[in-house]
Amino acid sequence: MKGIVLITGSSRGIGAATALLAAKAGWSVCVNYVTKADRAEKVVAEIRAAGGKAIAVQADTANEADVKRMFATIDAELGRLTGLVNNAGVTGRAGRLETFDAATMRRVLEVNVIGTLLCTQEAVKRISTKQGGSGGAIVNVSSVAAQLGGANQWIPYGAAKGAVNSITIGASKEFAPEGIRVNAIMPGLIDTEIHIEAGVGDRLQKVIPQVPMGRIGTAQECAEAIVWLLSGEAAYMTGANLLISGGR
Image (tube, rainbow, N blue to C red; front, top):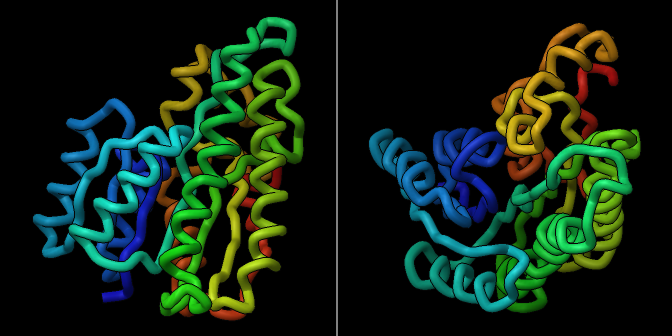
């Protein structure tokens, strides 16, 4: 087995694709979800049917008590963590900045930023060689919105993902001496449900002309990069942010 990995927000989309691919590569996987228990259990069932080991744990990553409970469950049911993928994220309804209320902006920042920080804290306690761990890797899922700004769609989300990029840089330097590599990916236009939930289901087709490669990316393509960053093949990489955007 490669080790034990927690993938937040992995009942669907990039998270689910990553969970399935990581399990195929030999990782024991914790599939995290907030409300979609049936879909999380479906991912777990698929992993187990293929001979892998997986559990599903409900937790809101923006809630400190939930995060601590989730990590304690992993300790008890899978063992000591060696990998973390901070994938959970929300955008809020798409629109110009003045259409976002404070509650929505706060939720976007809490899930994308505070959630990443809370999960990273708990992961470090288990992975760090300074704290008795064997070392490992953390991969943060950012977004090209951090680079483009999210204008006319979701500026708060772009701001949150910019913070994720900063967390990646800081954590990579802070924990490298303790055997922890911290990297990120920055997906661009990817075919997931995030667009429909934001109320812009037609966005994918509209933005394609802005993509030099002329097509939409897939969750599987993001998962391939994440699982590679978790692996020993990326052993000398830390602080990197891989742009997966078709050139956009």
